[in-house]
Length: 115
Image (cartoon, rainbow, N blue to C red; front, side, top):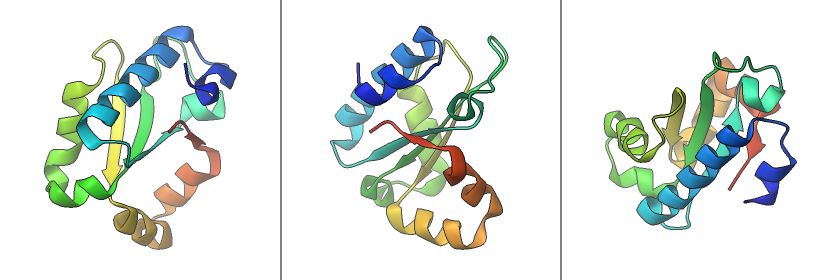
């Protein structure tokens, strides 16, 4: 398991699900992506069985995929064991959003890089 995940004080089930997603993302996107955990699991205030897993994937490869198709693509390869919110951006889109989105700025306060 990735050392970033090992350090987190989150349920082992969530760690395994995220680790599996990293492997699937490597297969689909190659190694050129960043994966961040944000939201309640990153802040440490999740509620067991209630909180969803919030993830952000940033990859140049998303430039080849229409925006509306990115999250559904990643959801198809993600675990169905838990509810997940997956945001997908190119590096350029992400940089632009940081400038104008208070939500994205809030996300970056507590996110944890997984890959």
